Length: 277
Image (cartoon, rainbow, N blue to C red; front, side, top):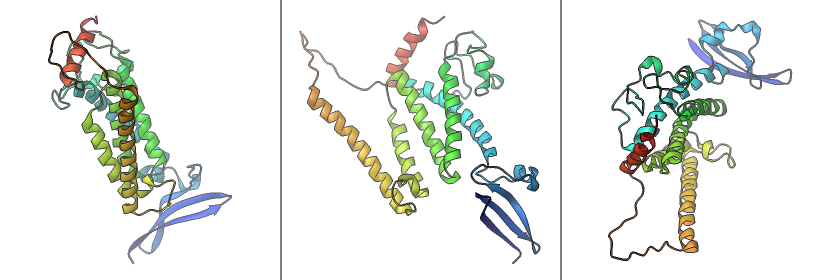
């Protein structure tokens, strides 16, 4: 046997330890130094350099890239939150721009979190105020990415990153325009089913500790059906309990009731920005 890897776990001084060794040339070498699972503390005798070169995924050092990735994704979510309700493409124009003067923002002034604080919440060109929402979305997304990586294994944390991004975008679009983009809800539903199949415990934490991927998929689908059916039932019962709105016209008139469209959001956005300095 030329090479092999073995993961070791043992208890010492009342703490659980884990390490990984690999066989090279007939000798065993540590590739992941032993560390205490409870405290994430590496023993000094194995050195810090080896940890930084090849740290395991459960090491806290990975929380820093998770935060940075989350901040960058949050910056993109700001683009989606602004453009999607207005019917604009998230790809064109590729460069972000000031919503007031429409001046493209250079890359040097488009650093997540840092740029908003550096410019003190104002456009570098027209000095118009930039909403705190841009900073809040980037920070919230970064913190959610860190929490997902800390609480869940890597194979499911990536799915939860995408799911959290969808929830952040939907939340802020709903707050500003009072609409929920249907494609985002369907994307989140499909993503939940796939994540439950990849890590079945995601849909069965209160049940079987080791469900199969089929059981995880069935439980996820059942949860989706119950939630969707529950919301539909609330709407229908509300109609029955509170009745229907009656509108009377003196003369016959054509009218219709529909959900807000991108053009409606665009007109409302123009009315809000028209009175800004």
